Image (cartoon, rainbow, N blue to C red; front, side, top):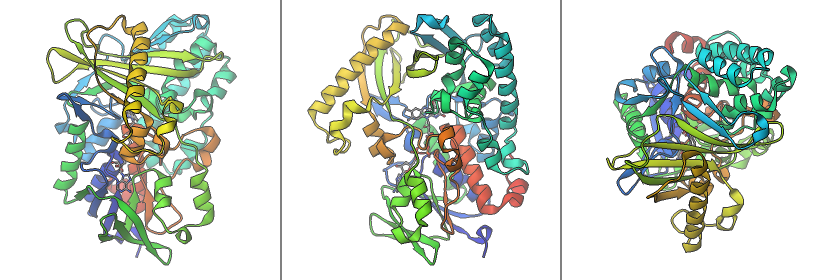
Amino acid sequence: MNNADMARVLIIGSGIGGLSVGIILAKLGFDVTVVEKNRQPGGMLRSYVRQGVHCNVGLHYMGALDEGQVLRRCFDYLGITADLPLMRMGGDGPVDRYLFDDDSLGVDSFDVPVGFETYEANLRTAFPDQHRQIDGLMAMLRRSGCQFDQLDFLYSEKPAEYWFEEAEPLGGVFERLGCSPGLRAVFGVPSVLIGVPPAVCPQFYHTMALASYLFSAWRLASNGTHMADVCARRLASLGGQIRTGDAVARIRTTDGSVRGVTLASGDIIDADLVIGAIHPKQIVGLLAPESLKPSYRRRIAALTDTGGMAAVHALVPADRHPAIAHNLFAIQTDAAGDTRDLIYVQLRSSERPDQNLLSLITSGHETLWDRWQQTISGRRGDEYLQTKMDFAHRLIAQAEKITGPLSGVRLLDVSTPLTIRDWVNSPNGSAYGVMRSTRQLSAALLNRTSLRGLFLAGQSVMAPGVLGTIIGSLATVQFIVGPERFRKEVRI
Ligand SMILES: Cc1cc2nc3c(=O)[nH]c(=O)nc-3n(C[C@H](O)[C@H](O)[C@H](O)COP(=O)(O)OP(=O)(O)OC[C@H]3O[C@@H](n4cnc5c(N)ncnc54)[C@H](O)[C@@H]3O)c2cc1C
C-alpha cells in the first residue's frame, strides 16, 4: 500500500496548519479527523474576548490576498475566501510605518506602501546615495517574489530544498552590496516578523515576508475566532471531523509504521497516516523512544526555535484616538542597522463603537517571567499579574513615543511567552516555531519524518505566518500523495 491509498488521516492540532492540511486532504478524498487539546479549534489563529472585545493572538494582518495573488489562490483552493470579510490596508497611504530610534541611521521614519515600484521609490528617496545597492536588493526581491508567487518550489521539477537551501543570508546580501546601516535597517525588518535576525535570515524567507505585503496587505474585518470557525466549518462540510478538548497523548506505532493515536482521555483512534501539526519537538515527545531513529530524534532536539512574544491589548476612547489604517513599528537597531527589538502597534476599531482596540506586540522579555516557568495559565498568582500590569504600562509608555500621548487607556489583557506555551504547547512559548536561519538550513524542511506514515505540518515545517503555514501544508500533502497527483489535482 502506498501513502496515496491510505484513507484515514489523524491530524494533531487545529491551528491554521492542522485545519489547512485537513481541508486539502479531505478535498482529495481522505477520511480526516483533527484532534485538538483546547476546547475550541484554531490555536494561535483564535482570538479571545475581554470585556466584549476580540483580542487577536496570531493574526494581525496578511499579505497577497488580492485576486490572483498567492494567499488568495490558497484561500480560494481551501474554499474559505467568500466567508472572510477583509479590509484592504494601504490604499493611498502606507501599510507599515517604521520609526527608528537611532539618529545615526540617517532615517527617522520609513513608509512601506503596497507595490514594488512605490516601495523602491521610497527607498531611493530615503537613501539617495544607495542607488546601486537598491538596484541589487530590488532585483533580488522581484526575482524571488515572482518565484514565490508562482509557488515554484511546489510546482517546478526542482525539489523544495533547492528553493529554500540555496538562499543567501540577508546579512551576506547586505555586505556583498555594501548597504548602509540605514538601508539595512529598513530592508531587514520583515525578517524579524518571522522571528529571524536579518544577518542569518535566508534571503528567500525574507522575500516571502516582505513581498507578500508589497503584493497587497489586509486585515480581517472580523477576528481570528471567525477565521478559525470558517476553516473548521469548511473542513466539516468536506466530511472531516474535529474532536476538541482532548489532547493526543501518544502516537501508536508498530514495525516502523504509525497505527494511530491514544488520547489523554484514554480513547484510541486508528489511522493510516498521522500528521503532527504542532511543534516537532512535541511530536517527538509523543513517540516511544525506540520508534524513532536516534539521528532524527537528535536532529529535532537540536533545532533552535524563534523567541517568544509579549502582547498587550487595551481600549482607548475612539474620539481621542482614531483608528489607524496602517501598522506602526517602533524599531531599535544595532550598530550594523539590524533590528534588535521592536514594538508593533495596531490601533483599530473594536466591537465597542466608542472604544478602539490598541494592540502592542514586542519580544518575549523572557527573563521577566522566568520564575513562573513551573506554573500553568490562570494559576500563576497575584505577583505574576502585577508584573504583567507593570510591563504593560512600560510598553504603553514606550509606544507613546510613536503614537503620541495616549489617554483614557483601559487595559484588557497581557499575554507572555508562557501564555502561548500553555495555549498551543509551543516550546518556551516560541512565537514562530523552528527558526528559519541559515545556521540550520539542512534541518529547515520538516514535512517528512523517519517513521512510515508520520508527517508534520504547521508553522515549523517550512515557514510561519498564515501564508507560510498553508504553504507548508501544501508541501506536506505533496509528500503524501506524490508530486504527480499533487500537480494534477491541487492547482493553486
Ligand atoms: C503574537 C503573534 C502575532 C502573529 N501575527 C501574525 C500576523 O499578523 N499574520 C500572520 O500571518 N501570522 C502571524 N503570526 C504567526 C501565525 O499566528 C502562526 O504562524 C500560525 O498561526 C501557526 O499555526 P500552526 O497551526 O502552525 O500552530 P498553532 O496555531 O500553534 O496550532 C497548533 C494547535 O495544536 C494544538 N495542540 C498542541 N499539542 C496538542 C496535542 N498533544 N494534542 C492535540 N492538540 C494539540 C494546540 O492547542 C493548537 O491549537 C503571529 C504569531 C504570534 C505569536
